[in-house]
Image (cartoon, rainbow, N blue to C red; front, side):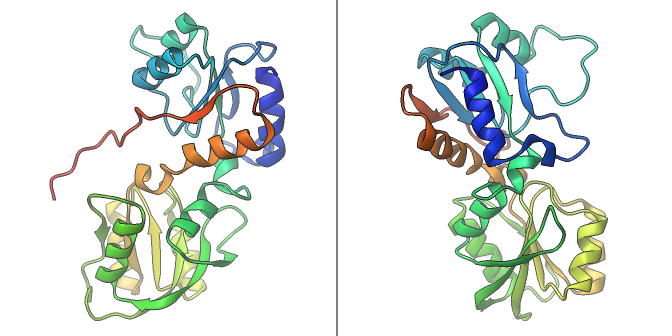
Amino acid sequence: MTVGDILEYLNELAPLDTAEGYDNVGLLVGDADAEVTGVCCCVDITHAIIKEAAEKGANLIVSHHPVIFEGLKQIPTWSPVVDLIKQNIAAVAMHTNFDVAKNGVNETLVELLEFESESFLDKNYGAVCEMPLFFTPRALAEHCKAKLDLDCVKFSRKDADKKSLSRVAVCCGGGVDRDIMRLARENDIDAIISGDIKHNFWIEAENCGITLIDAGHFGTEKAAAHSLAKLITLRFSEVPIFSAESEQDPCGYSC
C-alpha cells in the first residue's frame, strides 16, 4: 500500500477536482510511491501532530486544512513543511472537496447536531435542515455547545429568548459569506450555524432577521479527523490508521 493508493481512494470519496478554485488539495509533501507504515488524520498539521505521527510510526498525515495553502517563495525553519521533510512524512490535504462530500465534514456536522439535511443552499455549502424541535437562539446555541463538546458558542443577541427557530442552514468552517447570506434570505432560513463569522454579517443578520450561531472554525470541523480515519480504515487495514490525539483547538476561551 502506497501513499498514491490512499490518495486514489480519497479521490474516489471526495474528488479533488470538486475543491474550490482557491484551494490546494491532494499530495502536498512527499512521494506517492512511498510505502505507508501508518496514517495519522487531523484537521491541521502542527509540530505536535508530526511528532505524534513519527512516534506512532506513521509516515503519512492526511489533514483537512492544507499544510501548504498559497504558493511558497520561502520556507522558514519553523514551518511544519520542514519538519515533515526531516521526518520523511508525506502530507495529503482533503479540504473543500471533503467539506461537501458524502460522509464529509458538513454531513458529519449535521449528524452530530442530530439534524437531517433536506437540501442545500447552493451546490457547495449550506445544508438546509428542518430542526426536530423549535429553538430560541440561546437554546440553539446551547444545543450546539453540548453536541459539539465546546466551551463557548457565540449567538445573535437580538430576541435571543423570544424568537422561534425551525429552519437552519449548517455550513462548516468559515462558511458565511455574502452569497450564503443572500441565499439564506431567499430560502427563508431562520438561522445559520457556522464559524469564523465576520462582524459585518452579524449586523446584516440582525437587520434582516436571521440568527447566527458561531461554533468556531475548529469546533465545526474537528470531527473531520475522525471521519477521515474511519473512511480510510474501511479500505485499508494493513497499517495503523488513527486520528491525532494531540490535536486541540489552538484558541483558548474565557467565558
